[in-house]
Length: 75
Image 1: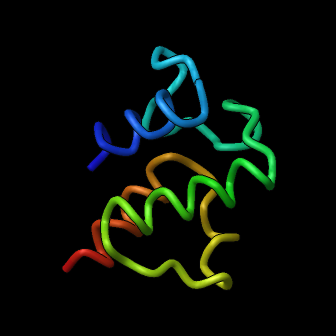
Image 2: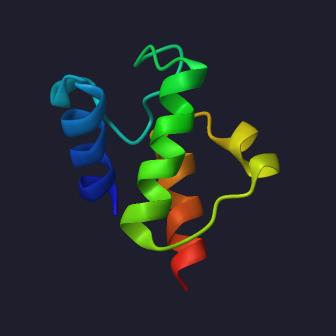
């Protein structure tokens, strides 16, 4: 799941793959803004066939937060 998310961030948001680690913070470390976060949510919904609730997006502080959320939704 981490590698898939990393690929999305590199391909769609043009982030440096060396910067993307499980503990990387989306805003502080990767510089993701609110529009890019919305794009990431839509891309993940499409890629994984899930729906991410608007209320859950504020929980996405690190890459690992997103990975854990996606893994829980896929079950």
